[in-house]
Image 1 (cartoon, rainbow, N blue to C red):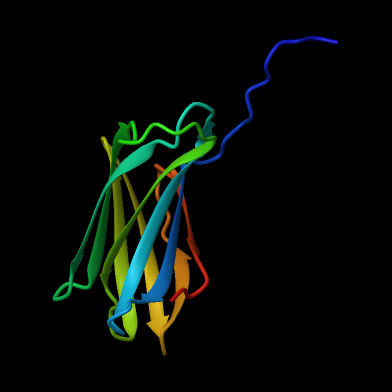
Image 2 (image 1 turned 90 degrees about the vertical axis):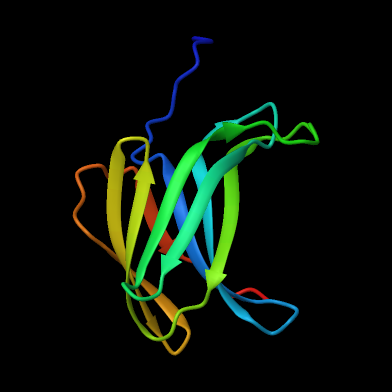
Length: 137
């Protein structure tokens, strides 16, 4: 038996989850949760993340940055993650653009009666998997 570490194969670097949340003020938000597939064993790293929603063009822009060490250094294992929220959009199609360094990936969200469905768009840099999550409150 060998003690050599076997690195898992990863078909994408990030998982991007879209979900609806109602705040304490009863305002609906579209949450964008991004987590790395690669797991870390030292700390619960945070992921640089910027999310903007252009309501006139109906484009959701997600910019993924680098890792940062948390302000409170508690030991934890898992992927680096961040969450951002934008006002929940009205029904219709929203184009999604995900940027990371020099890579770009596209997708589409379809919003119908508050439900979110995902459509992947062919992208040569398929570095992220898009999914919809459960509604939270």
